[in-house]
Image 1 (cartoon, one colour):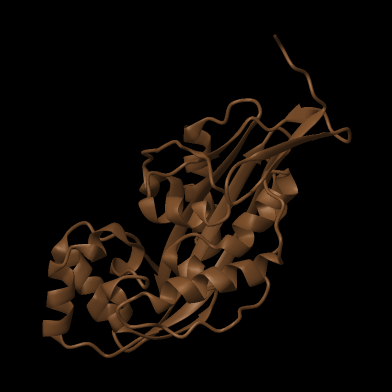
Image 2 (image 1 turned 120 degrees about the horizontal axis):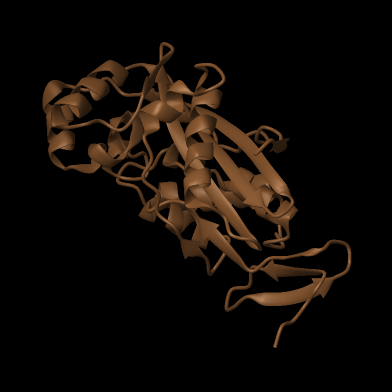
Length: 259
């Protein structure tokens, strides 16, 4: 039996999905898809949405970066996030989310280190200095594509070679842009963070929850920035060296983009 509805909205509930039908549109939300194999992003998305599909992608990130509109952190992160969304191939009715994080120091983008030597070199460059972390989020739906970028500034502690070497040997740097994880043991290298903590982690819930609300995929019970800040404080408090999380300004406006 084929059920036809003008629009089905899915709401985040602690126990299950709740579905309701309205009459102001002509599409059906069948499922939410995360275009990422990242356990970190899945864990963060699950704080907002209890059930979704994971659709891993494997793109040539260097090629995507080269195709960016310009080499600003926002454009580079957005170009890679768009490439992930397009490879994930959204099916009709799906709401698809993709994201990418870029670490920038002195105008130079630092991606995931290729090996332990590259990780150590990155951390030596970052030590005792400020750098910018930018995460781009892309949402594709039946009604179009929306994008947003969120940035934060991180100041690193001065670090001795032995401290960097010990952290690199933990293996944690290899799966993180810039060679560290602020929510993990990399927090011991961080002096302070200004802006959205979760954009540094790699998935700013302020932008993500606002997008999903716009798509009708969730019904937020609080403002997106407040939601993001609450979860950021909880995550930071569990890291080995709890980084202070201060309220951050509203994320960059969500804007439509051409697919």
